Image (cartoon, rainbow, N blue to C red; front, side, top):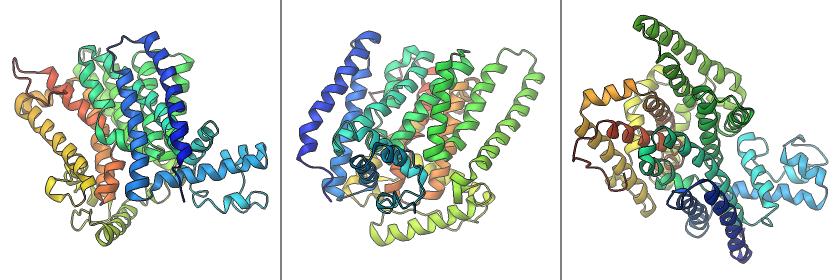
Length: 445
């Protein structure tokens, strides 16, 4: 099936012109000319278009076109009835409904709400792009960018002297640009994650209890829950600790402060478990009582397919299929997510980018540890709630995707939510204790 046609290239310049028209109005109203807003947007749009062309002309297909295929089927209902289109958009009919079977029978993700949500969003945007892939992907990127920009505003507001470094961490990491810009679940989740961070920080830390901020947080939470609820399982403990630190910081009594923290940590853990229970149906095989066995099955299947098809697999050896057994592999899982594939593990030209990026993350980590020293490194984490928040989320998430994926190609896409937070944590630690005259980091930091 031809997903990218001549019409894509005819309409794309008009869609880009529309996006830039809106973006320049926003920039001119709120930011100076040297602010990274426009540069970040341009990189994001490039990522969306390049990703689509890469999958169409190099890979010959991919999940991004499967999502778009569902969008086309949904919009096909407009020829018959606007009501049917709306019902399909919100996934209201049963799969075997007689009136809708001609549509539902063509959509193999109709019974998968998380994947179908992405197709439905694509259908809504496709109304304005005549159901063309590249223009729709550009709109996906533009909308997702608003979430990343909200995240950038959150952290740059806390550390205004590190605006450029924070922009690099959030807006310009190559993997997040490539896999977080097209028509994917990940693009939707990065949008939600950015606005959730912004909204919660505004009304819980800065005590801005406006309806707008609360609504943003609620909508973002529900959107992530609908698409990839396990992101919230990693995000909630980190967020709870972030809020806890800020609210207990003014307390002078050390014993009281530690007691409150211990109680709050217990509450955060309980809330995370409750979240997994509430969303057990959406989590399905990844619900609390089945996650260890499912992770083992997923690893085995992906490893088998990878070895037989592209060879880009990795393994941690034998793992006891229990929560305790998985936790024993925590260091290896975090290492594979953040620092692998190593250059000698590259088996495809397309993996070189991922390997170089992983090497840079390792260099950044070791360089910060070497320049700052372990005692100062630990004190920075212990005293700064933002660093704690970034590290807790990134490490929990890195462990979760590393222990279940077992394929470098898939991992490069799944891991993108944690990369900005991890990079940000390293940069914040470094600049808290930057040795005089020793700014020995990559030039873009």
